[in-house]
Structures are given as structure tokens and as C-alpha cells.
Length: 266
Ligand SMILES: Cc1cc2nc3c(=O)[nH]c(=O)nc-3n(C[C@H](O)[C@H](O)[C@H](O)COP(=O)(O)OP(=O)(O)OC[C@H]3O[C@@H](n4cnc5c(N)ncnc54)[C@H](O)[C@@H]3O)c2cc1C
Image (tube, protein in one colour):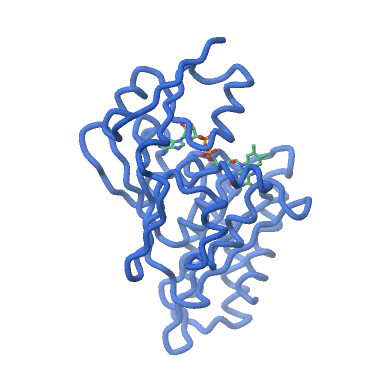
């Protein structure tokens, strides 16, 4: 199979190339593997030259360019709270290549950074060839097939309050493997009571999803044993995890409440 490589010079040119059947290759950890297995188109669009590899922090606002890698995040001291997330993704070789943009398209059980970004209530900026648009990550993930012909440019979010971000990824083999269940939570508190909790799950459906019933169970309460138990009991509601080589969907639904209970009680 012959492969054509096209180096994009402008973000706005990429969607037209995608419409002609090309696919963006970022780190290539998934896209090139597909190509090696004879899947995917023969045209790869290289987006290295578009300046999308920067991490910008302005006040509390964090902007991660789509080409920012997991290794870059793991080395940025300003993003210390995200280090456990980036370090839970593949081994060092994968982290050196794997990007934020690619993680948003990664099929379950992959997409651990997307889980964290969903709990952070992130916004995605993408170019559809005509204009740069912004949309909530949750909407993007729910319909990501629709955005396959757009270029993800960046993801932005507000830095969480100190000690309010929590993350766990349950795996069969330490230190890293694909997820059995991934959970990220942002738990802001006011006068000791949880206010606007956000909890996101990975590997519990085709893409990262919010655990809204568990979030509501915590609202306005102290993070005590009874509130935590109530939230954990609702964890698997509305989820549809797949069976794969790592776990069955049934098993994932059994363990999700246990891991959420431990994470909230930590
Ligand atoms: C051995 C191994 C272990 C892994 N372990 C994990 C893990 O533990 N957790 C995890 O989450 N993932 C894991 N992955 C999957 C993968 O490495 C990551 O999800 C990674 O973030 C994907 O990014 P990438 O830049 O390599 O994407 P690519 O392979 O370059 O692209 C993936 C898809 O996203 C599209 N895409 C990429 N960037 C853009 C953009 N800016 N705009 C539009 N479309 C875009 C591509 O067209 C393609 O369809 C693993 C992969 C391997 C090979």
C-alpha cells in the first residue's frame, strides 16, 4: 500500500484535505498502527508545522495545543495535578508521541486524558475549514464522529482549586496498561460542602462520560461516608462499558463504584 504524506501549512487547509480522504496524523500511536494493519486511508496529513505544540497558562486559564504530548505535560511543573494522568498513559515511548488531540479521538478503553479534561469541564477549539469554533468537550465527545473532518486546535480549561482534582485508573498490570475503569473528579468545596462536583469515567462507554447522578448525590454535602456511599452506588447507572481483552462490561460495572468510593474517600 502506498502512503502519501501531506504537510499542512495552515490550520484552515486541513479540513479540505480531510474531506478528500486524508487523516490527520499527530503522534501516530493509533493512526500509524491502523495503517500498519492495512486500515485507514493512504493519505496522512502532518500537522507538526502549525504551532499546536504549546502549553499556555494565563492566570487560571490553561490552553493545551492539540499537539502537546503526554511527556510535555508530565514535565510541566505548573500542571503537576495532571502528572498522574499523563504518566498513566502507555510507556515512555508512547508518552513521547501521544498527543492531546489524538487522545480525544482514542476509542475506549483508551482516552484517559480525555477523562481528566472532561472532569475539568474543558472546551475544545477546532477548525472546520471556514472558522475556528469552540464547544464543550462533553458535546465534542458525544458526537466525535461528526468532527473527524475538522482539525482540533487546542483544549482549554480553568486550573482547578488546590487539592480539588483526583484521578485513578484501575489496570490489570502495573505500572501501566489499558484501563479497566478510569475516574477523574474535581471536587470544589465551599464551607466544607461539595459545590459543583464534576466526575468523569473512562472505559465505561464508547467515550469518556460524566457521572451526573453521582455528582448530584454529593452536591451541598460534606464529603463523608454516607454521601460517598450514595454517590458510589449510582456510579454505574447509565453506563455501557464494552467487553474487551482487559475486562468484561459486567466486571467494569462491578468495580466502578468501588473505585469511585475509594477515590472520593481518599
Ligand atoms: C502501546 C500503546 C499503549 C497505549 N496506552 C494508552 C493508555 O494507557 N491510555 C490512553 O489514553 N491511550 C493509550 N494509547 C493510545 C494512544 O497512544 C493515545 O490515546 C494518544 O493520546 C493518541 O494520540 P496520537 O497523537 O498518537 O494520535 P494519532 O494516532 O496521531 O491519531 C489518532 C486519531 O486522532 C485523529 N487526530 C489526532 N490529532 C488530531 C487533531 N489535532 N485534529 C483532528 N484529528 C486528530 C487522527 O486523525 C486519528 O484518527 C496507547 C497506544 C499504544 C500504541
